[in-house]
Length: 407
Ligand SMILES: *Cc1c(COP(=O)(O)O)cnc(C)c1O
Image 1: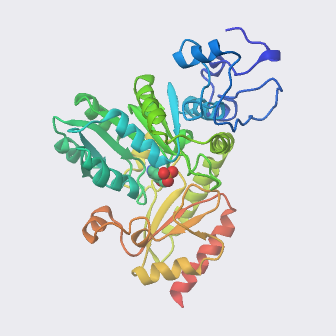
Image 2: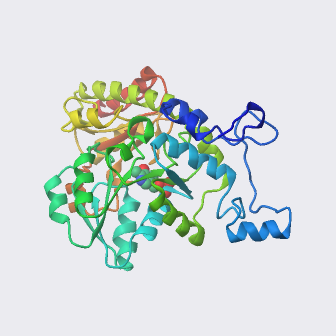
Image 3: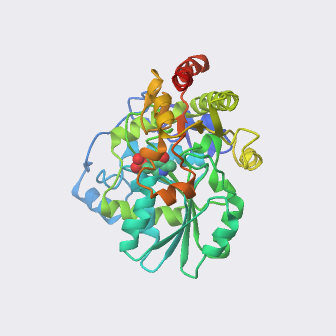
């Protein structure tokens, strides 16, 4: 490929080979227009024009590559897709309107009536609803099993099993799946192994390198990291991504150019943000473990965590989400949460601002008491998505919670 500084539009893919995720985050997938702008351009346009009727015909006929309509392709969206694909080490990426649209599009493109899915029990609540309520209506049945119980995964396999779906680490208890083992199981049964990599991002974990077939992201979380917009993406080999793209083009849950631009800029700071999240979360987890009013802390960075060694092997960091139980029940958990003043009471996560949540009555409130018990969502459990504020200021705010438990 010839490449001159004067006419560069894309950094050639061959140059990106072997670069670290830190470099790819700021350099991969950039488009430059004739203005030679330094930052990434944004193309907020629904359609594209042609030089002639013949060119329009060639574009529609597929003989000439190029943009037609932003439900199909848009340069800003493609730039975001190229960047995240490079960071995850995937051949292709397809951006979607939300994380849920990424999961839906994957299922619609790659499953059919009669297929069976095995999903880990602790997944994002809406993912659970999508499988149990909607996919079931179209003849796709889902079994839910414990993320860490390999025998349960093996027992759940049926001749019709076509997909294994997990999140690792899990929300909110930070359980860690053995991706190599699940990848082996999926291959032995000709099923797809899909990993929702929302919690780790490619900075801390690259599931394709560990045997996953497809990666899902809610870009809404860490990829943006500043709570600005909702989006999603699927990453993996072209043989699957082309099918998913085909569904998206027909069904329409595509990402807007504006959102793609925000996510593209978000990726640039993702590596330094993730390290700051990890450092703060580990320090808080260790500090919380030493508090008399804390019954238990769940964080894979702690040596007390049952999958600590596995997390060390699979991940380049332990992430920004942790949870802990206070002594008592719902009343004590709520009193603790309400006593904080800086930390945001919200169910969102992955933000530079620290957020605090009571899973039993919010994110996991729809679960039946039995399912809550199975998933370990107790009334005294509090989840923190640790942001990048100064650690001492976070401790000062959490001490307000501990003080409220004494009063
Ligand atoms: C938020 C979230 C989703 C859904 O993403 P949206 O962008 O809200 O549609 C999926 N998986 C995980 C792990 C999430 O945290």
